[in-house]
Image (tube, rainbow, N blue to C red; front, side, top):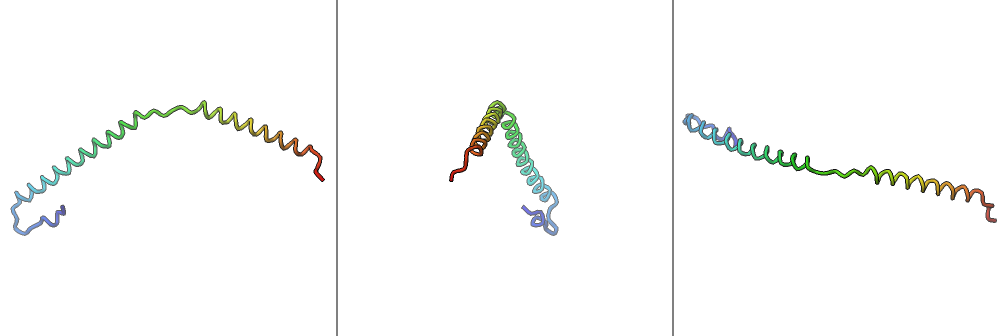
Length: 85
């Protein structure tokens, strides 16, 4: 609702204030609803359990190190073989 649309020359000030009060009360209800929604989202987010993946991450790093050693050994063996003619 645009306030400019409600401006009338010579209108009753009491009616204008009543309309303004109704608009503000509607906005207050809407704001309260939004506030409750945001508080609910924040509460839900606070209860999310994030798993600890540090053990799995450590095993992945160990596996990567083993694979690197195996690859280096394969390269070393390939370089030590006589060339194929």
